[in-house]
Image (cartoon, rainbow, N blue to C red; front, side, top):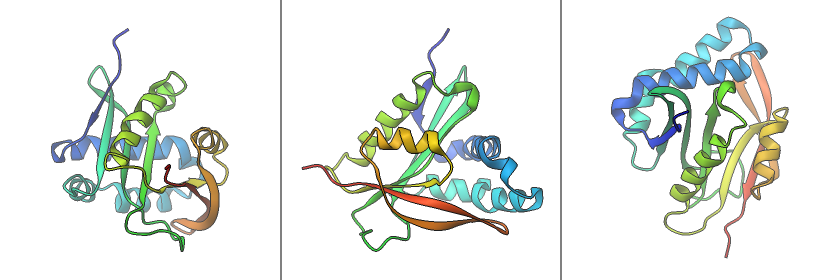
Length: 174
């Protein structure tokens, strides 16, 4: 079986990133929301033009995971925008980290994680942050094994639904 590829995405990948972002979010969380709320959220958050703008931002990095050329996952990291009083301009955040269920639990997540962490800490260790749904226990366990601890909560809106989201932090090492 050919090895999956993980690569940094460029603005030319906007349509692909937008599509896989919609697919992975819907596969993971779609059952939680009213269909009209979900569609409005997907359009606002993962529209191709929004994605292209993000891909052009030098402060952000996107990754694309491909299996035989087909997108099966993606990630996004950049400046921290989580609502916590300890967030500073030097902080960075893992904003998205998704794989289709068919490609989970095979080591791909760990490989993608390594790529992301290398980018986030390329200029030295710093405080790193993640927002994670309060009921996504698998993700919380994954992040906990990597030194992240809960330091707060906030409401994450998808239409009329406000999810309880945990704020996780891993302090700078050193």
